[in-house]
Image (cartoon, rainbow over the protein chains, first blue to last red):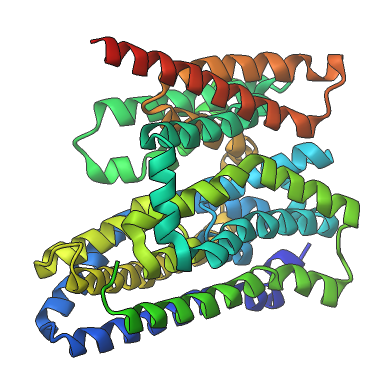
Length: 232
Length: 224
C-alpha cells in the first residue's frame, strides 16, 4: 500500500511540524522583545539558548531507535508527525496496540490495508487531542487550579496515581502480547525487560546509555527473541 | 508566574492560537485519507476508539497539564502539550537555559530565559527526529530477512522494556498489576469479557493497589 509513504501523506503530516515551528518562533519573538524591554544582555540570551540546545540533543536522540518501530507499523510521514507532537513514541505504540486488540486486527496490517491504517491514524489523533483541548481550556487559569490541587490532594499521591495508571495500561499491553502467543513474544518481553533492568540499575553512570535505554532494550528483545527461537 | 501582565497576555494569545492550529493539524492526515481516498471509520468505530483513548489516557489529559504547570508556566505548557516530551526534554532545557544565564527561575528574567530554552529544545528535537525518520525510512528498506523477522516482535520488545522502566518507585504495584493482567488476559475469553474492558480493569486494579500501598507506607512513616 503506497499511501502510507506517499507525498500527500508527507504533506498532510508536515502541517503539525509547521505549527510547532511557528509556535516556537512566535514565543521566541515575544521572549526576545520582553528581554529587550527589561534589558537582559544579549550574551545571556545566547548562552541560555546554546545550553538548551546542547541539553536537548541527548533526550532528542532517545526516540530515534524507537522511531523504527513506528515506521514499520505506520510509515515514515506519520512517525515524523507523531514523534514531533504531544504523544510520545510509547504512547503512540500503546494506542496502536490497543486499537488493534479492540478492533481485532494485527497492528502490522496498517501498512497493507488502508482501512486499518485509517483506524490507527484516528486513534492517534483522538488520543492526542485530549491533552491539547485540556491545555487550551485550562492553561490561562491554571495558576489557581494548581493551588487547589495542591491544597486538596497529596502531591505524593498524585505522582503515584499517574504512575499506577501508566502501569495499568502497559500491564495489559504486555500481557496481550504474550498470553496465547508464540514463544518468540515471551522471549522478546523477557529479554527487553531484563536489558532495561540491567541498564537502569547497573549502568547509571552512563547518561547516554540511560537516554537510549528504551531503544537498546527494544533491539535486545527483538534480536534476542529471534536468536533464541532459532536456537531452541 | 510572570509579573508583566502584558507579556503574559501575549503568551496566552500565541498559545491559544497555535494550539488551536495544532488541533486542526492533528486531524489533517485523517482528513487527507477521507478527501483523497474516501476512507473514514464508521461512527461506532470512532466512538469505540475515542473511548479506548479516554479510558486509557484520560487521567493524564487532566492531571499532567495541571501537575506540570508549576514547572512549565504559560509558554512551557502550550509548547509541551503541542510537541510533547515535557519531563525528559522541555523541563531540563528550560532549567538549563535559566541557570546558564545566571537567573533565578522565579524571576521575570528567569521565565524569559526558560521560554528561550523551551524554544531551543523544540528546534533541536524537530531537527533530530526529522533526520532520524528520514534515515530510518531508507534503512528499513535495506534490512536483511533476519532483521525483518525481528520486527515481528517489536511490540512485545517495546512493551517489556517500557513496563520495567515504569516500575521505578512502585515495584510492588508493578508486580501485582502484571500478575493480575496476565491472569485476566488468560481468562478473558473464557469468561466472555470484551477486550476493550480489560484495559479499564487493569488500570483500576493498578490504581487501587497503588492507593492501598500508598496508605500503608504513609501510615508506616507516620508511626516512625
